[in-house]
Length: 397
Ligand code: FAD
Image 1: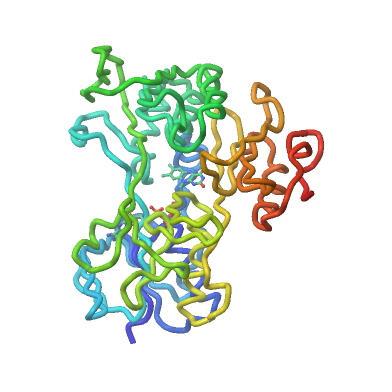
Image 2: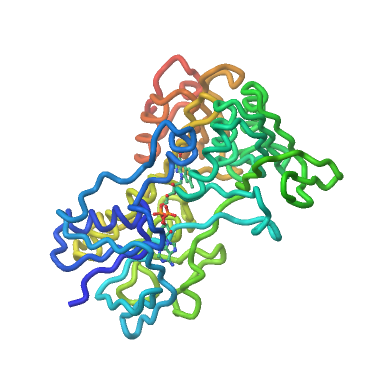
């Protein structure tokens, strides 16, 4: 028998292999990854690894004792589902069950691919190329003030670099947070000694410089482009697998794809959220931890609720000395309630839909996050006055 084949040896792929064994899969498990490195965790790349506080971030998983065959430097190039066969850079690989966990790849600035001094921050190789530039306290320009841009700026300032972040929108994190929340985060850049230029378009990246649309030239020993990531699903073209408009594999509520015996999980896959009534594509670590458990349950044939994937999304970011955490999913129509003073060191914002807490963002208030996340999971009704009082715990009404 061909067994289970997992493509992509990042968090989601590794967790899928582990969960399959934990849940009783006795067949063969092959874990294929395009990168040459032992499977590793990504969040430290923009934090400890970038600062040289950690050499690497390899997962502490004993693949051999789990009977997981890890095959590195192998890229999946196509899928022939009718034949239950994966095409790879090392030849065909047959499967009984296939799990697609190829993650995401960073969006590039057109024309910037081969410009010397232009970097991305997605892989261990990327982080290792950037690290010496931080050590040498070079002049760094980040394009994009999203999560990656903020974490990179944090690390580069900590290393003593001069840092400029250019952002096309009028505020940081414009894609993730409403203006009235993100406005308070803009000040964090200046406080850390980083320059944030918003409402600014990049016209060209050149060796040693970033040229803005108004003609300004910013000197840059390294330019780091952090303008988002897209599902790494190009290799599935022509396979017949259904993709969503955002390029993600359109999985169902059990993370099954439109092809028989093919599942998808992690940054490459979207799923219909019963909880939020819309299809979600989540590019965060917790999703690559929780999703695989559902995939494994479905593969080993546990037909219960375990196999239905309907998470409350969660993520964290460490920026400018602050621990930022978000749980849930909000929309523009939800009511925003402040909990604490956003000018202060620690505060939370909550989103209510009617009397129900649907999401919260906690800055330096991990207890709010922990309590709020449980309320969101339960769909609990809350008291608005109590939510707004940072002095009392978040509790159901
Ligand atoms: P990936 O980690 O992208 O792994 C996919 C793997 O598949 C890759 O190794 C890739 O090389 C491989 N692959 C791709 N195509 C193929 C192919 N055709 N054949 C074979 N292999 C292939 N999230 C948080 O919640 N908090 C954080 O603080 C945080 N920090 C982050 C910092 C950085 C610098 C980055 C890049 C991400 C961060 N994230 C964070 C997001 C989190 O790391 C991702 O959500 C998570 O890594 C997703 O895991 P994945 O396995 O789905 O995808």
